[in-house]
Length: 397
Image (cartoon, rainbow, N blue to C red; front, side, top):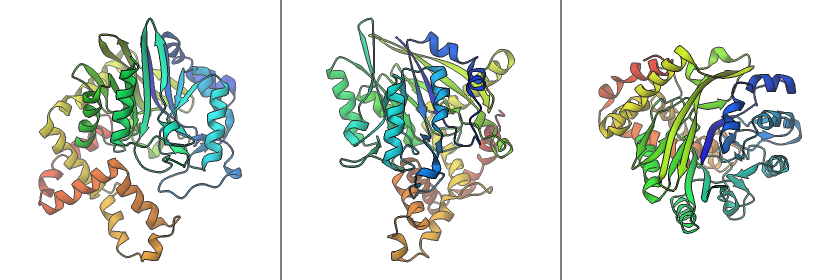
């Protein structure tokens, strides 16, 4: 059974829908990969609707929504299932989330990773062929819009729930796969926490882990016979007119073709580039360059010491802010000047920043490790890898 996994799709930054013909042309070189697979999955990272009709939830980061017309991009690809486990599916509350789910289900897609409560959000997409049953569970980090027992939203990560999902899938004779949305944005390497987490999923019985969210490609490994894809990068997330503000790694990525049978799973990567008018699988010299880059960034993953050193350097960039990029340490320092009343205001900037830093696993790991670097006086050593990571963000190696 061959399952094609693609990552995040968002149309939030389009000023208007380009029309059905333009959509078909954009995806004409990529659709064949969806048709060739037995089953396929994409993650929709904006809700469908009219922003003027809904109130955005308080959060740190943008609230993403596009008009219902943009479902045409999904229709052209015609995936088997659409995942909604991400940090934007409840950006405008439950009503447009339910409407989006309805639109997708009416078109025949399995919709998973979100629901009216946490139990529903954890229900898998199910694929069956030649006596093999695969159950794919979409899970995301605990940022904004997470479901609870009596709250609609997404399938926020809980170790016990993931373990239970894998165990119950196995008890049904199914092969479980985790489709995960998380990690440190713009970092070309997974963190030590993510390598540990995804390997734990395999140890629990997952046949593969396929992840995304970082807005750049990360590497992959085969762990105990199971493919672990740390991040495929964006699948289709154009920002028309804002391309000059993006790292080059924003607009490239790879699809993951997972071949699953009763003996195990294997992985084939399918790299591509995109802009607002094209999505193009890489061939020739571009293919060779990208796969060389991917080989380069995946090489340290199995070296625990090296991946920790690289994460220390990443913490200097994003945690401490040594080169002008986003600094979580500076964000945290602003909390001390706010009053208790300010913290208790759900929509306050201090409250949303505080929640984002400490409840999201990737941000929590980042700020904790950044504090350890400062406390243990490791700044000079951590700084030694900063230029290397910044070079990789430019797709240079």
